Length: 154
Image (cartoon, rainbow, N blue to C red; front, side, top):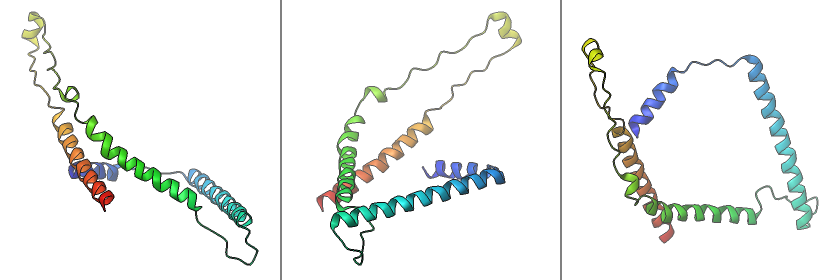
């Protein structure tokens, strides 16, 4: 996986792209508008929370997420981690999915063309690097599963 990451980094460094000033200005303006809209929405939500809680103007207003939303997000994260731990190992045990693919048929030329154009055919190993990457990903997944199981066991 480190080799793939290195390839991707080298490829990214070779990319030469220029963003026209007009596009940069449009992006900055869109980000500014979105930031203003977000801050207005956050201020309105904080005002609604303060009114719902019955706080008065001098009291400190709640600025974070409501407790129910935080708890729901936490439960969703735990459910997703459990799904990874419980479902993915069962998916990887399918032997039919790992069966080797038959070799591609070798192309042949008619005899009169074969004398003029000698054809040298070599089989390309295109699945080797992918299988190594799959093994690396499985190893990473196993490590992550063990960490989650250890965290859930406390």
